Image (tube, rainbow, N blue to C red; front, top):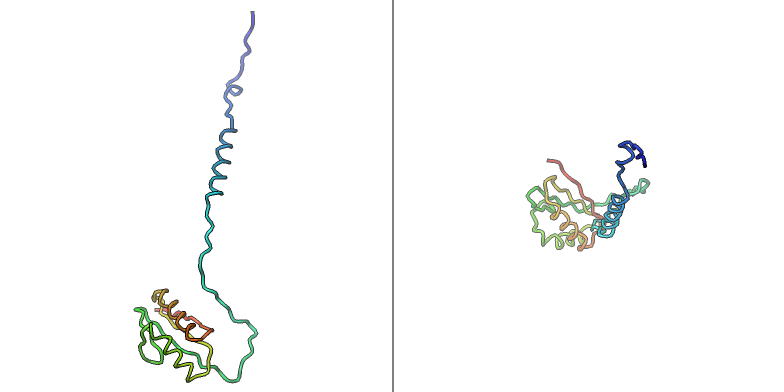
Length: 135
């Protein structure tokens, strides 16, 4: 007559972790393969160097103001966004400068500021500074 061995409950209740690990690795591979890497568009920003030489003759920069409603002011008068290029070219003809300063209100839409920057660059001014005026 055979006798049965008495086994404890710990020996009988074991969980096999292999299927769970297989599933985790398969999900990891799935997420890595399906991830799309998108390069976002951005503005090129050139920061001034610390050791710039100071010229004796200060340059007269083109000053453009944009209020919170999107109204553009150049030379003390309101200008339509489509006329920024013409006004900037007129300013360049009268003054020898290669810089422009755009002073925008904090609540101005970014699209208006970027469009004015593009218009100024089309007019021939390469160095554009953007200042944000708080409230």
